[in-house]
Structure formats: C-alpha cells, structure tokens
Amino acid sequence: MPKIISNQVLFVVYFVLFASTLTAQKEDYQWPLGSWGCSKCFYRFFYDFNTDPPSIKIREDSLSVSYSMACYSDSNGQILAYSNGLRILNANGEIIENSEGLNPNLQQSYLYKSYPVPQNAFFLRRPGQDSILYYFHMDWGAHDNPSNAYRDAGLDFRVTRLDLRANNGAGKVLNKNEVLVSGFFTQPTAVRHANGRDWWIVVTHADENKHYRFLLDPNGISGPWLQEIGTKPSPLGIGITFGNTFSPSGNYYVDINDFTGFSVFDFDRCSGLLSNERRVDYHQPAFPKTSFGPGGGAAFSPDDRFLYVSLTKNQFTPAIPGPIIVQPYVLQYDLVSQNIEFSADTVNFIPDSLTAANLVPILEERPYNMSYGPDGRIYIVYKGGGFSTVRYPNAKGKACDFRYNDPFFDNSVSFGLPNLPNYRLGPVDGSSCDSLGIQNIPVAKFRVDDSLGVLGRYFYDLSYHNPTEWIWTFGDGTTSQESNPLHVYTAQGAYQVCLTASNLNGSNTSCRTIFVGVTTVSTVSNDFSVQVFPNPASDQIRLEFSALLQNPAILELRSVTGQLYRTGNVLAGSEGTLLDVRNLPAGMYFLTLSTEGRAIFRKSVIVLH
Image 1 (cartoon, one colour):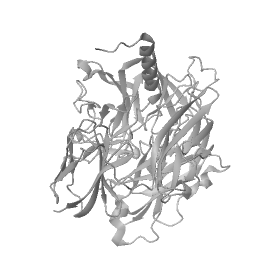
Image 2 (cartoon, helix red, strand yellow; image 1 turned 180 degrees about the horizontal axis):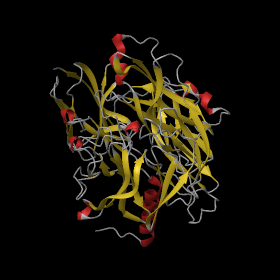
Image 3 (cartoon, one colour; image 1 turned 90 degrees about the vertical axis):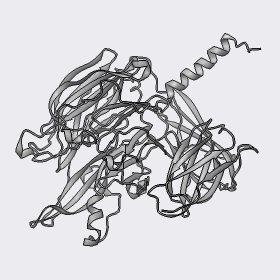
Image 4 (cartoon, helix red, strand yellow; image 1 turned 120 degrees about the vertical axis):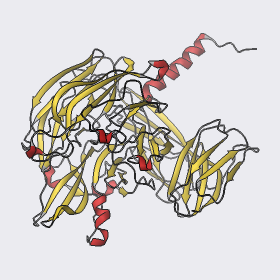
C-alpha cells in the first residue's frame, strides 16, 4: 500500500531541496584538463572538487584543452558546459549544436587542438533565466603594429549565447561570435555586482590604459562603458594577454599585461569603476643580458591581503636567439604594505646553481597561469605541463606552503587553467546598490589537511557569504573559535567535526566524519567483496564487485611510498570499474576503495610493462 505524504511534509522536503540548491554554488567545481594535441588524447579528465582532496574523473570526449579551457557546472558541481575556444561541449561530452566555428580568425592549425591563448574565456548565466548561458571570449590574431609583436594577441571581445534546455537538454548555441568591443585586449574577467545578482564584466586594452566594462542583468548585456585610468607604459613593445583578475571579494582588480610590472586598482562593485592605482614595477637584475618577465599568472589570497604573481628571470646570449636559461619565480606581494613594490617575497624554491645538466627542465618549468580553486588553494600551471599549489594563501611568506608537483598527474598535461569568476560572491550588505533583499547568510564549508602527523589535523575554513564568527567542535569534547584551527587529537578513532559559520544575518553548520590514525579496513557488508584482475597488469586493472556498490566511492592507486598516481570516483550502483595503469612506472602499488571516509577494500597490485 503506497504511503500518503502530507502537504506539510512535501513543503518541508521542497524547502530543504530548494535551500540546498540556493546555497550549493559549485559552478567552478569541475576543471577539464588533459594532454595537449592528439598524440596523448587518451589522457583527458575533469579535476573534480566535489571530493576532498579533489579527484580525477576521466572524460569520454576527444576535446583537447591545451592552453585554453572554460567550464561551467551546475549549483551542485556537475558539469554543464566546457570549451577549448573552438567548440563547446555539454554534460555528455557532445558538441553543442551550432557551437563549432567559434573565434573565426583563429588559425586552422589549431582546429584539432585548442585556442592558443590561456584564460581568454568564461561562462556566466543570465540572471533570472537559468537556461541561458553566456560564453564570453576573445578571438585571436596577429597584432597590427609590428613594434608591438605579441606572440599571442587577443583580438575583439565577443560573446556567444547558449540555451541549455534546447534539444531536450543537449543544448544549442543561439548566436555566436557577437563582437562586444573591437581591438586587442588582455584577459577578460567578471565580478558580481554589489546587488548580489548581476555581473560586471571588465576587459582591458592590451596597449593603452583603457578599461571597458559591461553589465549582465536580467535584461541581457549592456555597455560598453569606457574608463581611462592608470600609468601602464604605452606602447608596450611586447606584452601578454592573460593574468588580469579580480580579488575574491571583488574589491581589487589587477592589470598585469606588460613585461615591466602591473597595476592594482580598487574596484567599486556598485558603479563598476576603478580607482586608486598602485603601480608595481619589477626590479630588473643588475647583471647584463638578464631581465625579468611575467609568467602571465596572478591570483589574490582569499582575504585580499596578498597578490601572487608568476615571474621569470631570463638570461640571454648574443650567439643564441631567445633566453638560454629561465628561472621561475612565484612572488607574493603584501597589499597592506606601505611599499607594495618592495614587499615581494619569493615563495617557491629557486635552484642554487643553474648548469647545462638542468637547463632543459628549467626552460620547461616556466610558471604560467594561476587559478584560485574552490578548495582554497591557488593552482599554478607550468609550461612543461606540471602543477604546483599554494596551500595556505592567507599566510605571509613561505608559510603559505608552496608545493611543487602538487597535484601530481604522472603525465604532462595542458598548460592552461580555467578563468573562473567568484560565483559564490554575495551582495555588498548596506551599500546603495544592496536593493534586492539578498542577504549574506554564511554557508559553512571546510577542508581537512592530515599532513601534520598521525593525530594532528589542520582545519581550513572555506565558508562563504561573509562569515565573521566560527565555532568548531572536533568530536572529542573540545572546541575552537579560530577560523583555521590546528587540532591534535589524543587518541585514534573516528570523529565528527562540525563548523558553524555566522554573521549578523544568520548561521550555517557543516559536519563531516574524519578518521584519525585508523587504518583498519572495514567492509560494507558481509557479502561484499572485490575481485581484481589481471594482477600483474600492464594496461588496465578490472575491479568486479560481488554486490552493487551502495554508496559513491573513491578509488586510489598509490606507490609504496604513499605517492598518489591514480584516483577516480565510482558511482553508487556500480558492479565494478576499470583503472588505467598505462605509462605507470613498473612496480608495486596499493589499491584502495573508500566510501563515506573509510576504506572498504585494499589490495597490493603489480604493474609490469
């Protein structure tokens, strides 16, 4: 006999689901990464922030992302659309109707790779009309002034409009390549309007101190409005087209498109106007035939205090064109310093000596783009296809914990990162533009770092919507009111940790179970078992389950030293899964299947080639 559910219960269920949809805001949770070109087209994946730590989810499409990628997920972190600047794909990895032929000036040589300029595009929904998605992008072309010979020139700022619900949810491009403003530009970017709903979109001229802004609201796109401000050298002679970005709060904007330095501006989210330029010039080395040049990456710390910039020191010789040695730098600038220019601190590690033996890796490991991840880390991609992270970007100097080869993908991946506005930014409470009744009620979120010994854990706050107070309960009877506490447990075990984030408008609580010093493998049920074959393996390892997997699981393959080589999600209801072990070094590995924070299966496997 079917159960009868009252309208009151239905209302409560609907409210809970609706509220969770409003607060999830995970539009930046899936990053499409992979190898450049088709020689390694099999290595394509989403870097998925729905897990802690982030995991790898293999992509089934044939899209090469190379330098360029743009991505947009729904509020629950599931991919909706992504692009490499040449075409747009939907959640199923299918080319969205009428999306091919983007950026018409793009050279045909890039047709099967990707657009050659990093961070040139991003997605925004139309406020009040969730089915309409805008793709903002720049075309590509040779600079029309030979003295300003950009290697990568962003030509004409454009927009392409999609209907996500068309074709039974497969999507359709309604119109594409509409020119919003003509000329050569640096990386476009966007920030939430002070009303908490609309968007300011800003693009800066590549050669002049001209900043164009647009407004995206329920009526569509309006603008451009031009503001001329700044002391950027003009003409530049040579420059780059990426690096410009807003701080997480939207209070600052950095114009970082020239080889001599950058400018930090205040930004008014009400009016969309820049002000109070603070110009920073790189101190060129005193040694002959050396110079500093930007790597093209910039990111602010979550608290707006620090600006991270990638930089290279180039050494030249008359006999060989181009630099023969490139030293990579990641610099941290303190924006509250009385002299920002001299506050620069090198947070990565530079080799003490540069010899011919390590010349090639140094040339290849040139830092490029940066992106602020939803896990609170700053991600930095290198020209050679490696990644590094700044784990605690609010910390001053080397305490920010720069990690080279973290995450480690055991493969040379594309040297581009997505251009991601802060989708979780709320209104400016109490401002003249705070007119829609949207309130900054905090959403509690945190990550856990367990690299502090067996019993120590570092809890890193990721809450958004302007929390001002934090209360942590660690599951062992102790509490903390710090925003990012370090806690040492006195005994091994499983603990439920809860964070309550609050401000004057309200509060929100998030809880999760963590496992401290617990290594015992438990099973889901008495009749659940896993078969692994072949073992040894050289190509793929197959896992077959004796019963359907009841909950989503994470599959990890680590070396005997603990280094993570493979990771991926296994869906609830699965009967098994495959693990690709091609290109892994031969040797012994440990395979672990975990669900709800605990290991349900662990086995050693051998890889042979």
